[in-house]
Image (cartoon, rainbow, N blue to C red; front, side):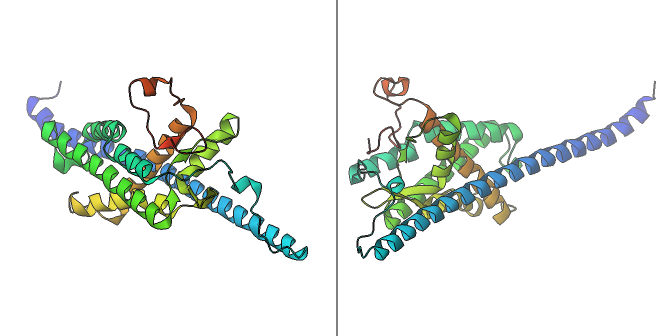
Length: 271
């Protein structure tokens, strides 16, 4: 047995080493998560870009073919046209915006995210307890509100349709790919053709940047805004996957409890 004095001297040193090891482990986990999210973001961006370029290439080839046959009419490939597509009304847009910003899903998501931040004590300046949890919930809810408002405002400016349309394909992987790519694409025009969506790309980072420079501690900066924006973008992907695979018809469980999010359209036209 070591003397009491010696044990008292070595205890603080042991605690410091343990704290350093814990910090190193947390940083390693955060680095891996951040790298994974960046890879997902890059993959989504490339997939959306390839889809946009493919659509434009098909349209251009069709135009060349028509000019060769002395036809002035420009036809769009059938894959980009939905004859049953209907543009959402202004009432539908407002209803979607209110639901996506103040409805039960953003509240539940903010409560969950605040709980995770409370567990990891992030940021530590907000401390623990009810006050700390309230700050984290308000922060997460504010990020969602700013991001959603930015997305809908820019979508109105770019004349884009913010509804989610389930894939007309079959099979798990095609539907999963459709849900992921839809995160960075939108419908535009009276025919509802798919385009790369600038509002969908900017929105998650607008909310994160507002939080970092608005109410986060001063030590947070652009790198943190990019990291938080990546998490927001990943949550958008998860939301689209839920809309793709969960049944949302009139007899679904969500409809019975009045939680049927109108953001996703189970059919070709708006809800």
